[in-house]
Structures are given as structure tokens and as C-alpha cells.
Length: 287
Image 1 (cartoon, rainbow, N blue to C red):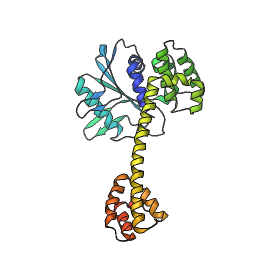
Image 2: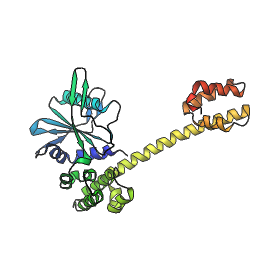
Image 3: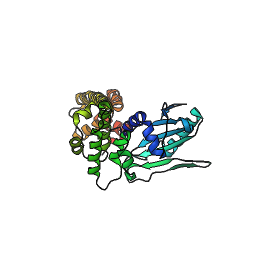
Image 4: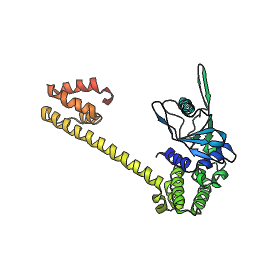
């Protein structure tokens, strides 16, 4: 599940709510900037221009501090690119959505470089600011609470009180998706009306991405299975029935290795040639 896409959607559609939450004061005018940054483009999660303050808020939403390149280096890279593109101060917030029990770095250090950024841990945040701002309501599902299920019920109640039908649908979709980081699916379905959830644009978008990813995986698996069947037929025709051990080792090969084996086996003279080929090209498949 791409939880950061939910947060990006919220930041894009409710930038002022995010800016006022993070800065702790009113912000009269906020503009959403393009998130693709120059020079071999990378895409930040959210860039908000605070016009009266001539400052950019850069937001990154994370579920884990582990990444490649390392997260602190990514934050430095985002800062440099943002400053180069806009030439005004950039204030960064890394918003971690769930507690994984890992240490969360707040700075990047190298021999002559030191870069710091702000870290927000959602599980430590007071839920009130989120409950009182419709654009932040979905994030309240992740906030601090001694009774998290009661908090989720309150979020569902307040979302259903939003009068604008389209906004209500989107908030239901975002809240139900983010709640998945913390609560069981059945509880979420019991509190949020499923038909409204499914009408949400962001909900449909993420589900569609999942379907497309599943289709792509299915295509790749189909290609691999086809290559495996061809190799099995070729080997069986030349050397007779394959042993269960050989079958297992063949099944562990990816498509590129199966294609290579399909060509190489034309020169095999005896079953030991297959053993030698597997030992040279796919030692990880051995038990």
C-alpha cells in the first residue's frame, strides 16, 4: 500500500492546513509547487510555498527510516535541489506515519557537511489539531491515544459530518487507507461506509495501482512459467524424467537463466552437464 500517496494527496488539496499545523500559526497564503526537482529529476512528496514568508515547506511522508540512498542523504539532496530551483529558504519536515521501533535520524553528517531537518512522529502527536482541521482528519487515525479504537470512531464520526459530498468521499478514502497502518481491516470497514470509501478518487487510484502491479507481476510469472515448461520438456526429451531435486532447482531459476539454459542444453551430452551448468550459473538454487 502506498501510504505516502495518500499523504501527498492531502497535502496537495489542503496545503494551508498542513502549513498551519507544522508552523503552529496562521498562514494566509500557500501555493502548491511542482514536486519534480531539477537535474536528473527526483520527486519530493510535497513542496508548499508560503508566499508572505518567502519560504518553502518540504514534506516527506515515511513509514520507515530505511531507504536507498540513506534517508538523511535524500533529505539533503531534496534541500539542495529545492534551494537551487527557487532560491529561497527551505524548511523540511520528515513525517513518520508509524512506529517501527527503529531509530530515526534527524541530520546528515559528512566530513564538511551538516544538514538538519525536522522529524514528526505521528504516534506522539496530540490528535486534537487533526480532529479540528478537516484536511488533517485522516492523519488523526495515527495520532497518540490511550484508546486508539475510540479515536478511530471519533475520526469516522467527524468525517461523516463533513457536508460537501466530494470532500467527504475523499476524506473517508484517505482516513480508511491510513488507518490500515494501525487497525484491523474489519474494524475500519465497520466504521467507514464502504460504498463511500470506494467512490473516493484516491482510494480508486491506489486500488488501480495495485491491480496494475498485480497484472504486471502476473505477466512476469506467466513468462517465467512458459520458459520453465519449455526447459522441462527439452530436458525430459533428452535425459528422461527429471528428479524432484532437479525440478526444484529449475523452478528457482528466473526467466533470463531459463532462457540461457534452454540454449545451453542443446550441447549437453549427459545429465551431469546439467548439474555442472547449474553449479556454474545458479549456485544459489542449490540446497
